[in-house]
Length: 304
Ligand code: HSE
Image (cartoon, rainbow, N blue to C red; front, side, top):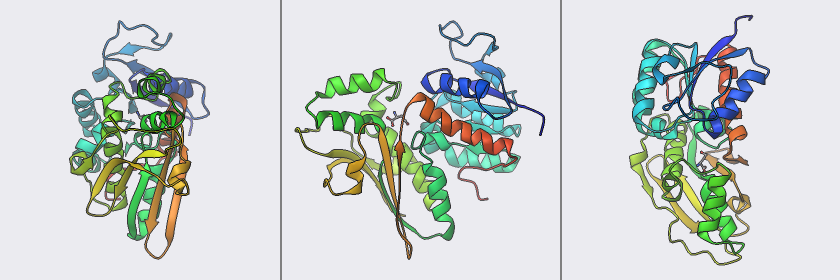
């Protein structure tokens, strides 16, 4: 294939800038057609690339949305998919609140919808669950899917204060733009809803997750407390809890995410890896783009 895919990138934050770098210098035949931001007057935008409004970026060959939020992204996704344009996003709020509607539209228009980076940062959790769900025998999911809270809780376990640890996670670019999504458990709830939708082949929204966050959680030096996400085919919960040091989940420290998938007649599968950070998360978006370059047209939450 000689044609290069023209990428319209919406969002130039930690992940957007890292993705821009990969599109410009990575191995895939991609062109950074334009970058869209809500405020074109902001500093640090890339030089030599057209800066446009989000609506204009929808005219590229593939739209990558890394802006976050719900209102703009829902309309951008609908508009791109409606004209058959592949849509790649790391926006878990969008997928966990409007995923069914977007997948239906993608199927009607035969447009790809991809969101690897929405869960697990750079760790291919959606892909692993999709693979293991093929036999229809996933029994449960259990894991740690928010890096900021793992970072904070593990730092508090070594004697640092909640405020110091949160500040470090923000400075390193792990936390959401509004870190209350991390510490209130909503980020983990959105990711769990996405994974459960894939595991049981039916879209399940964030509002079905019983969610508690970590604000006010007491951690003494030496404690291993984590924000644990758990799902079965009929219930989803996110809440902080003490973990036995011998529990494999206890191995997730710093920004690591971990997911255990229990499959009937097969056993327990585990996947670990860095769950946040610009380059890490951009790598997952880039892997989605690789599938498009290879001619695949996957639809997250789709029927095929
Ligand atoms: N704020 C998220 C986290 C980023 O801490 O896990 C990755 O989704």
